[in-house]
Image (cartoon, rainbow, N blue to C red; front, side, top):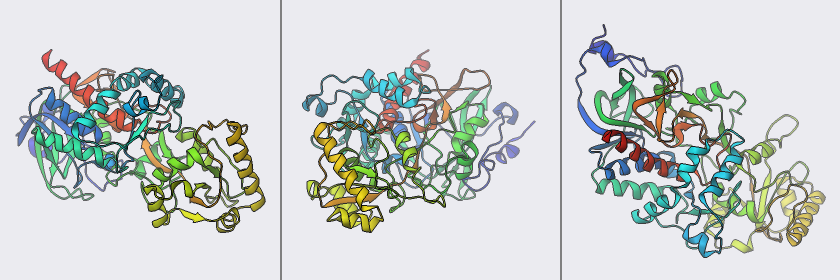
Length: 505
């Protein structure tokens, strides 16, 4: 029989990033005797990105009682606060004003299923897509401002349905959802690290939490116990910054690749849930963003700049001066094609991507990229070839072929959609490109109601839910651009409704 003193010794123990070290001891509350709870809450949300903020807000609006959000880092927002601020919304007002009236949630789901390569969960994607306009309306009512008249078609999608927030960063959304939650009485707490779940007969009843934790030192702060009366919602995101776990699940992933994620994306709570029976799925499906730049660290500005390049310009190999891919394909297709560009010693031969400078002289994406030297203005193809060591004759031929394709609106080489391509004329904005680790498709298996599935029984674990990137098996092999924000916020709505129905039952 374990006593409370022994229980306190269980849980995560060493440096962040060690998969073995952060696996908790799996112990039932019934083995520990009576637990002395420090406090309780009706709904406890773990993580404060899009998914966690949405789940907390909707739990409160569903009348589920007290809602506490626990965030291990020192700021609200997680990866969501630094993402690109894109949102896929079929039949959004800007899209309709552009004359695109034949889009639908079903069209979006079809694009996602194709990108998922047979591994996506269509039922969950449909439930999310059906809430797209609800997500848009929530953003608008919370004070989020989207770019005027901005709605484009992004990689792997067959319609222009991607809108973007005013400042091009997810912080435009996280800040507003947080402010709405504060106004409605949600209790947000920073620097709270989840050491372990407390289980009782297959049900999560509370959490062992390290309060006043200072990332990444697991010895900081003190342990408290928080009882969960109605639900624990896991919204802790992916594990792309956990190099040991990444290598364990996908040793083929180039360990030298940079990562777009915030430093806290290390996946401890995912492992904790797994230790208590939660079923992991698709853990080896780790997505790279094909819009990464080797000339800036982390998420950076390249994703914004290349949203121009993929549509209007071209990507060219420095090895032979030729195009090598459909620039508007999905992330996996493009990333795989880019990473084939290597020198004989296998080091990266960073491809170049370029478009017309004078078409975007005052565009903030261009101004900032040139200022920060992750892109360059060149006045001729000759200058481009010399600066980036590209065969000039082949480069000229490639540009001439592209310009001919613009006229015919066809791409005989890669079947790229050419509706937004333009004739290339100097001067150009040129950037180098190389993928970065961006998103974990794998995580905890959930049902359509966001209930976490127990791998031992294949039934939901009582009172345990998961939303956002911490879940797995939804997108399949690759996630399409602008769909993460939609998934996270929509699943926050769905999970609150699920909990409400179960509390009533």
